[in-house]
Image (cartoon, rainbow, N blue to C red):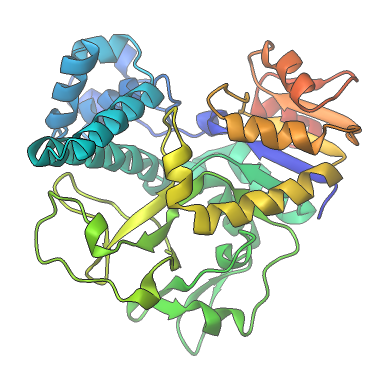
Length: 397
């Protein structure tokens, strides 16, 4: 492991942006021309409605907004100008859904299941939008960070579901076309960089498009990298098959029983899925679930659901963090609801902190003392208010 460890939170993505070409065509006022950046938990719905206004997203999320209006007393107009924490929304839906299941209320379970699916769909489609709009290529900061990471090979711990960082590393590594298979092959491969092996891996072939290959075949000729990106809350391009009893009650079409050999299999897709509002996540006709810990207060149930994947990564992180000498935390502030994360770092540095330097990249200076306490660090913090300032210190012009 590298003696340098990066910790990434959602704040790192604020350097990404998509333009608003529809603003002028709709004759919107000049204040609506600003770029849109990926959301944080407290401005998620504001960003979603801005993208809907620009016609990047359709307007079929009414079932979700009706739920918000009824349960939080906030209309679309309120959400455009005010704030509703995404974590609070996910938490209330999950609590009510669990209660409906416990009460054996089939209609309520179906209703809340659809609402939850709609919120997850909106969440994923918004993050996918920033990938599809090539915001990675337009961000000088993320492009440079990808190049720096590819060269220096630090260990990365991230709580982000998106894979913007991975895309920037791929871009830095360049690609080639395999002349025999016409497969698109990057110099840095995600399947080797996550600190774990996948049971199925999707590749992209110029002749036939997307193709699933068996993990045992892939790893028979390639070993995981010595440095890893540990995604402790999962990733939008990681999936697992769902057994029939976990299929959404509102799902249309036949329900295909899941063979036992596919239980707990992990699938790495070339990219993530774009679920429609009424559609479902599926691979080759079988329902799948994205392996992500949705932003809610009570994460225990989700951790148990994906324990066969995430527990392994948490254990690896638990062993690696104490070896760290240089810790750089970008866009993450150890929120109180992330108790498992706080315990991970407190335990890692509990006896005697081996940290020689702690760098915090965050405009909120109040996170410094909290972070120092969690990491048992008694020296001065090196801090930067934004990612660009930090990258300039690394040599970005």
